[in-house]
Length: 182
Image: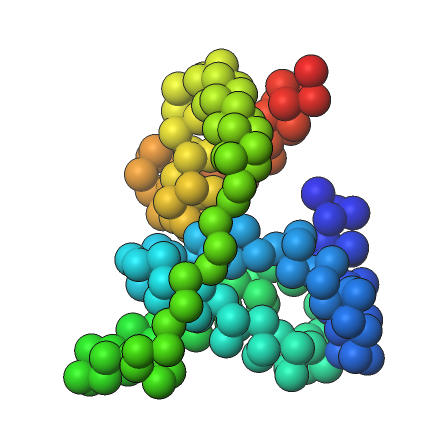
């Protein structure tokens, strides 16, 4: 986990210097998690995709403001994604149909049949691996990474201390990684 944090911090530092390859690598590494955060706030895929674009523009423009302080760089990235999604949600609640020009929305091209089949197969494997964990651990991982629940929310939901929840999630992810590599 520490090497992931260091890698993301390194990528953010390179993005701050205008490195497009690092930006692409950062996107590949964190976009799924940030999309989940946006989707949880906005409830529609199209709105979450728009928020993601805005989020990564903000990351590109403000990467030089990130300070490695021993905390997770994901916290900084998730905060940007969440705040961007909330801004979009507030704008739409004020009566605006869309922040962007209405009528110019284009659907992102979906996966081709082969990609869909591979994704379905991987999803089935992941579900099997999650089901192989202890029930509360699997539910905690689903809550954190599929529903976007915070560690504190999960600790309260499962009535365990926060550090115990962190341990459950870390060990559960290690078990999932091992299961998926077989």
